[in-house]
Length: 280
Image: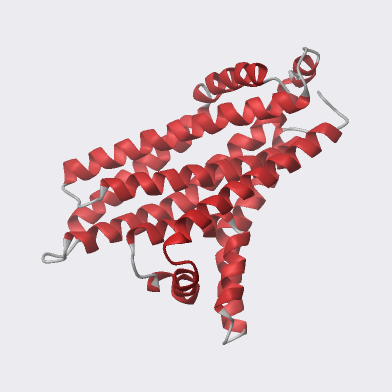
């Protein structure tokens, strides 16, 4: 595997991502909705509330916004990597060049991963400027850390999207699969935890924590909340148990878990792409 070829392909994919409508749509939606949250928060924070508490509330709303939009952004970026080339009938031409399938996929993922980081960075800058203009007490350091965790979530879901798109016959099929996956990660994941708690009154916290590690969206949410809340009551028993068992290592462990998720999904995508029969 040649690193130079991967970088060349990554540059090609970076330029294509920056020119794509999905990149500007999701990046603009994240920035606009985040700025809207800050505008609403500027008029809803009661007088006398400490800045640390008010900033924590705003950050919590930002975390929930990112937990909704970032997985959809990452899944879209990953799914269109190969499925989009198949739709445009350019994948066969690309494979005819002196480049391996592993180099193609890794170059595409690297370029799209950098584009996702740029999109989240731009949205974070807009949020910081909006907080400054609206005089909302938003801790910049915590916001940057949350954005960094959001990028790890974007990479994990991008790799998952690539695994879905690697075996899809076209972009429409890949988009259908990614929408179902997004619902499973974002909506049904929370509903399944709630259903489990309702069905069994005494679910061991360690079981809930294990379920958290299965879902990258839950990993992001727990890690992000742990960044700016010393107490984890807001996440219920699973948050308290995670803090008790892991202490100060909670955020690094969850960040590493997101990287493991990314690596595993990339390996699945490589396997599916290597074994795919149709190239065009």
